[in-house]
Length: 240
Image 1: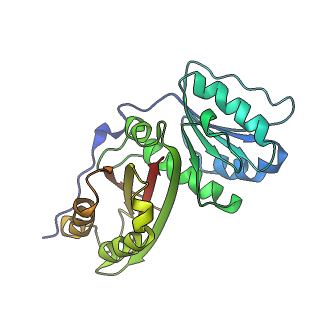
Image 2: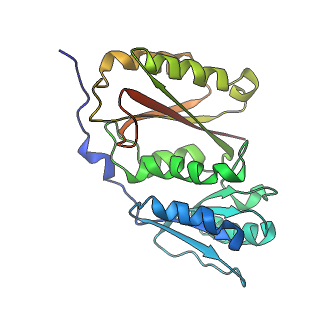
């Protein structure tokens, strides 16, 4: 009999009260509307226009600052949140790294909605192996740079094939810069091919092969948007 995962009901135990996604200027409106469409609890998504003022509240735990232009205003707002002890992430070019905990690298504007979803999904949805805001904070606090990569595969060797692709993505020069790595595996609970423990060997082997200098956290999540017989592996890598 296939051995399936059991749901960990403690996944939301430390869910923070507020995550914010702030677009700086009208140029970010489409991105912010896409984030709103995700319908995530505890997430607010707003577009700021002049005078570009925003003050952190006591409930704020994380803010994602998005900008296509107005970088100086974005940096100024980010510094306000960062100085208040809020986990502050930047999705923009020409970021002042001193104003953020971590800024995205190797990403285009068209990828920003996907990146935001990749950051939020693990901490606002219920996982089968727990990952919460504290884990995300550990990964990204004062990391300076982060990147997100995903791969989807299907078939009997889907997890192993996804891991092979991830390995190719993480070049030797990149691994030398990574200090913290979060790995998320997503699958559909209604899948005709249930995810089983045996498939996880490829993931655990991958983790054991990584340099000891990299702190690794991994988690498993159901996701109804995943097609039947598919899995998706997403990595969130951070480092100076």
